[in-house]
Image (cartoon, rainbow, N blue to C red; front, side):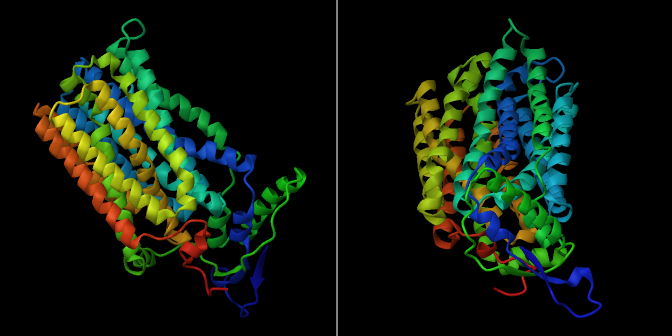
Length: 490
């Protein structure tokens, strides 16, 4: 329950104190249909991102041959970088708004932006209009990340948080598979053909987005956000409503074991306090999070935005068949977080995150050498990517988990946004453009140098996590990072 603490006469609501056990009550709940539906309605954002990124690669050849766009390999890479730039700026803007205005408002606003922008992409009439709409699509997805990841973590009981977060992030690859199949079907001359097909492909996300809006209508605001933003009574009402569903279904709720928190009410967190918390008080956590996100962003975006060009330019795969090669690639990426996710809660974050990063980097260096020496064919190359990204997908997902759970509640969404922006800006903007140019050179050795760069970044991030990572497994968010509004440790 939430209980006001007696305060001096005349004290403002902004400065009132109250005790609350809401975090402990959320963490003690058994997993039920409520959590499953919440995860499905919100976690599907990653599926949309997978769809968008895959479409960018799968329709690359169609974009190059489109009478309206007539894009080069370098411009394909630029389009990928533009999407990432939108995601970076969208994450920063909407991340700040998510912490200030609430999780629920923002995951509707960002979804509406995504739907409108991806639908508009289908009607692009030249290169610049295509780049603009891809930028806005990225902004919607970047904003979704901040609102969605913070909401899911704040509702999920601590003992499930690692596996749930990794599995949700892994659904990116269900979207990738959907995009790959959609591209194969719609680019088929017997169905729509290349020029009309790529336009129809971008309509898939808009249709899915409309369905997702309906799925999210029942989701309440995060009680943890309400609790620290001077609305403890509304937070209490939501949690009590969730608990009544358990009672009505005859599900026993374990007794509380953690003491209540004593908080000082606030409407918002000043930016000065935000940046002090991120870069002074939690400087080491910030460096680890930045290293993890930068490495995975370069690793993924450099390879995945340009994989279609590797298949067509070096292995002679017909453009219309590229999508089929994504399916095993997507399977490995989805299975990684799904099968390895529980180990992040059992063996711990430091061991599993550093191990998956290290294994991914080493395997990429080995497969890159085999590619450079022309020792593997297209099937073997695809299988190599499948194995590499089985580990890399879990690694990348754990990067988002790390930055979301290791900073205080008041700045969680903005922390996700800041490190996503820095990491993706450094790794994601440079990667696709660089690899597009390396592939344009037509030299395998140049592409190999790109692979070695990605591998080195992953190994460096693994070492940083092993030395300075936080053991956040099975711990309440408030214990991993003390809320800024908490008055004492009681």
